[in-house]
Image 1 (spheres, protein in one colour):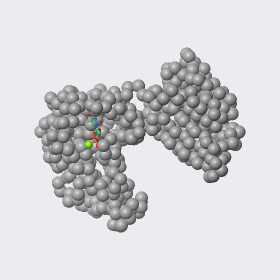
Image 2 (image 1 turned 60 degrees about the vertical axis):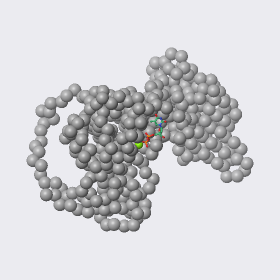
Image 3 (image 1 turned 90 degrees about the vertical axis):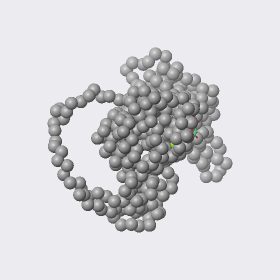
Image 4 (image 1 turned 135 degrees about the vertical axis):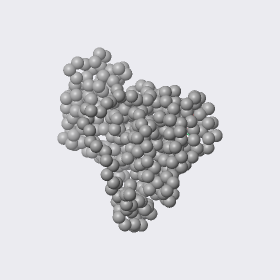
Length: 444
Ligand code: TYD
Ligand code: MG
């Protein structure tokens, strides 16, 4: 029998400590440490090692979720036996999406949807609204994990959905539902159950701001795949991004739109973040961003206004504020743009957040365009990283970005010299630049 040890775990950051304290020594949050029993090293199981080539493998089987966009985020569909954590703010659409997915997957294999948050009536009302078929979809309103897993066995379900992990309890733990101890114990058992029985599990986790209820971050390391909803309340679109995936690429993003009857996927999102009618205005430039495994055309906007002699404001929405400061300094030093006393505002249309350095050059061009009060030339796109010496540096996937822009009908691309492809796609002129000054000359 394994011996039990005690540790204290922070509900916010998941850090362990051996002693209790009022403040987490790691993240500094107050009153977030709670007792957590750790099992000592387990007794030998008697399992023997085998050679990899001795294992018989099925050709990889995956379940389709009914959304090509969601399949892509999962790395090509749901892997049997995989545990997928789906996190997001309350009300962002986690239950809606997974109910739609369960309605599709049940056409292939039996599914159990276990909810500890809503009554069966609420679930069935939503199912009606979403027009979900439920021939082999079972619904269970319960918060006891043992019973939920028992029902999976009894119904021979191949896919289990748990809504949400913060409401589930493992019977012999005395701590409250939603505590770190409960979350870890429940997810640990779910993972073990999933691997032993080849049942795929979606685990919903609410992102919480309070310390009393632990967030999905404390169990991220235990599951195979971690997905988060990214949603800007002002935008019509909801994005789902993979931040960890044992069965596919991370950083993959799917785009969805919420409608009156659930989510609709946006199959070709490459141009949804463009507002065509503002492109001819000063301060607007289209950048070719790279999201997951595809290009996305995104409009960058800048507004340069007289600061009135006060301390100049620099406001960046969707790009890093420090990066903007750096770009403005490089422009001043190497691009003859005297912006020292001007207020500068930069915004990415559609509420997107750009983490790539490839948006450096289009950001700069949008600032110059607003500063000179002149629109950039028609049909222009651009991408490229800017160095401190005023040089334009190459970024990854240059060729793919140019091809995506040409496909959307853009006629001119200002790109880093090293990103020029051997063969130019039809209909687009490529201007190669290696200094920011050359880019400024080419853009107008
Ligand atoms: P929900 O999926 O319950 O969010 P979560 O489980 O993440 O807390 O619902 C999200 C929101 O979506 C809710 O405010 C109602 C809205 N909604 C629609 O707009 N259309 C629909 O068809 C459904 C089912 C919900
Ligand atoms: Mg819900």
